Length: 506
Image 1 (tube, rainbow, N blue to C red):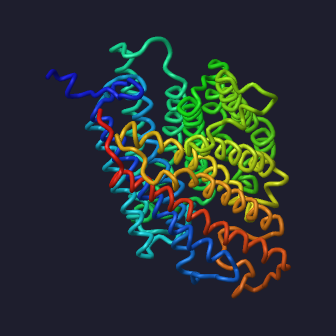
Image 2: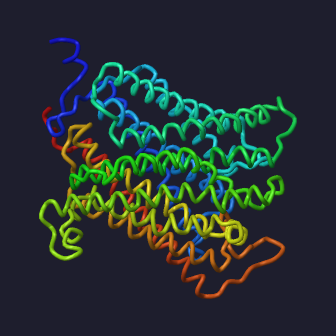
Image 3: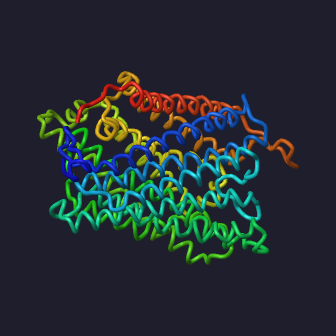
């Protein structure tokens, strides 16, 4: 048996050569991502049952503590661990290549795991009640900042391994022509990731030194500017990775091919050039930036990134329609849609992710990102409603969908509990639609975000809302619980497949 046979196996379904070290790294990153999803989901349950004013489960101290952990686990740990798995899949597996440096992949994993564990412990011990933004002069322990730095450095190492693998594949001619569109999109995500994580290092290394007492003070305005280069741009990595997964899911579930690859690749380039600029809508009330700067940013440049999303939002469904019409579903305008594989959880995840991101998250983001409306909406529940639609209904649901193919292709197990898997995207996606819509509606009435009690108890001035707001917040609570149920169904199927799923022989 030669070394190539030992290092690779051939997937019986796709015919792709699977580099075994890359396969192990994909598995371990994906499993760890799901563990953090479970942690973040449990925290989310506590959040929903506390913001539901009638229940109001947690006290003030534990609300802010678990809100911090919810943000870190869901916005950072779950998604970036899963993106590391996507980067290794899009490079080594899709290009039939060996992973450039598997040892560096393990350095990535260990750094991110240690960093994530430190942050989790520090938050639960009450030494980092600073919420996701951790605005200075609000201070956490120096261990908290060190954990974030280690996590970010690990993610940078993962991106370097990805680009090195692309070079190896090119040099060893493991593919012909251009890289697949999915790999191109993953490369765009990795470029944005490096820009984002560099902002994270510039933000948190001085903050760590400040927490150690080695720097006398931190400038709050400079911190906010640099933080949002990390805090919001990290969600732009998710957007890019999510769109890549959309194209992959379209191909896997219906056999679709992009209508025009050049246009789709151009849209990814627009993301690289302009999407990070959108982060500055967090600073529209800060005095340090000029009015002209804010106007150009939110009135012009941001919309070039929006244009990219609109291109993908038309391209992916169009490709699916063409693929299904080629299969003979040509009667009328919508037979192709009626005959689509709605019982395949990967396809339903794709469809719900597209609609959730495009209509709820995307449109609300454009509206709330304009300077005039941003000022009156930014500190209300409208914004969590918007970003739950983009990050959860969009990115998380897309990642859940691709899991239903990763399990048999990479873990070589048949998906267990197929009945639960079939309904999971609908429970999760539709409850998220209700959850996000209710939050945006409540925000329109002035219900604030990041606040333990919306009535302002213990504050100098109390706020009395009408019954319609109580009803809306009840919808937030109930649909939030249903979201957690949908998330638990996903974890049950994924973990159940690993434990009791039927093995697929290579």
